[in-house]
Image (cartoon, rainbow, N blue to C red; front, side, top):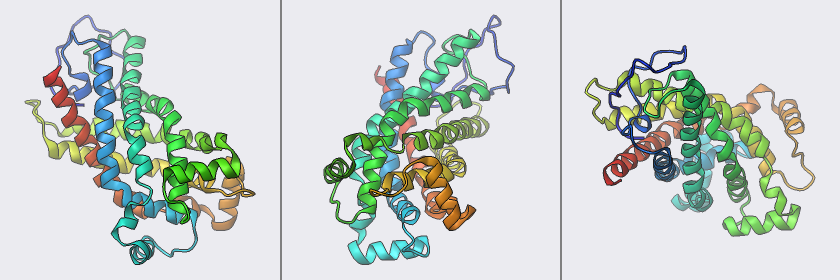
Length: 315
């Protein structure tokens, strides 16, 4: 995504009956003659840059979230933080980061490529041109669609990450893959895929929908690039995503961290969690998630926007 610009309109366009879009979004504001393939490539690459920025900014919070979701050892996020610092120091806060950082480029690249593809599909359905502005309903559809291809890579990457974060005997991603293979077979690396999809489809609908809405409302009429607007919209979008996604994320973490003999089916995990902790059990880790959501996603969208602007100048 790049800066917000005014787009040319045509009196012959067929616009779906949705909320009016005041301005174009960065990924929709490329020259009209730019090919869909080129736009998809840019979306893919910029998503990778944004994802790397997100991981670096947010991993310590994610680590604390997973520890809280998968163990009753800690009383609070602060207690978990103190425990990690006492055992491993600052390096402990970045334990397990190799897996998401290594996988973040294809995962987030695929997510933003899927988002772009979802917008193309929506335009095709309504007979709109490639440079037309999308309504909010179309943005929300494209956001939900982005989770489908991303989950193919997200689920195994998070399975490895969760094992590293919750098993102190596992030293890194390779060690985690060996443990997964030895205990339950390599196919179990995809465990939690359904829960990941249940988390990311509605979460991504909120994520992209809120981001586009806020950026359009807050952007200046001259269409200039404002990093503060991008970061604010991205941060709030991240919070909106997790408000929707935290309950299925707790279930996903339980499924992916389960040892042999522990329940791994969504229904069984939900029932056990409710029986043991009630409704509040589905919101374990909410504190660090919300602390992480704003800075991590502000960094993500800033990375996306800046890299896309640079690519627009280069090719």
